[in-house]
Length: 232
Image 1 (cartoon, helix red, strand yellow):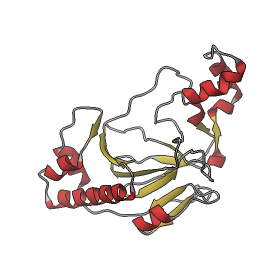
Image 2 (tube, one colour; image 1 turned 60 degrees about the vertical axis):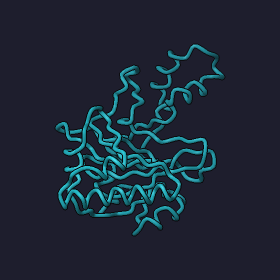
Image 3 (spheres, one colour; image 1 turned 45 degrees about the vertical axis):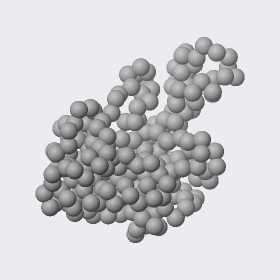
Image 4 (cartoon, rainbow, N blue to C red; image 1 turned 180 degrees about the horizontal axis):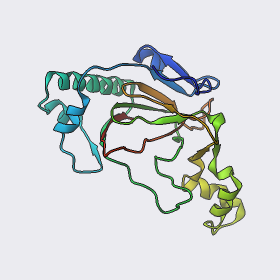
């Protein structure tokens, strides 16, 4: 089960996919979880796949052709069913095998890669769906327990040094380079791990959203462990 002890009431659990897509975010709730314990050997899918990049996109047709044991086939069927459900809903899911994401070292004091706590942004109404089948899972933090980095005076002052334009254009500059999407957790704050096997719907920053977007980050890979992820 998902640990809700430090989620600040931002998480609501549901019992099936239909409830996941039909339940709306309200109040503090900006993360919906279809809490699941999955059977099958998901690591076998990683082992049998051809991995040539740090992030390998596994197409459903390729996944269907992998020679797998019965446990591997069970895992494959779960992934393909999740993929099918999300496609039917109108989403654009992708199946990824992740060694690691690219790190942002352009601004050492302000990385904008996915290992930094951030929110997703879209010009149209949408949500982020994700499930980690194998490997370390993502983490989220309650909005009340994190500060937008561009509002932290010392960070804002450093960013001003990068801005060559007029003062009235500074906020547009921050948005253009995605600085406004990143957050810094407050001291001694605990995070919620999204867990393996759970399918999540996270609120995105959109013009019409009536809740705060969900602040999340990708896990730092441990011991060169690959991660099998469905995301859209």
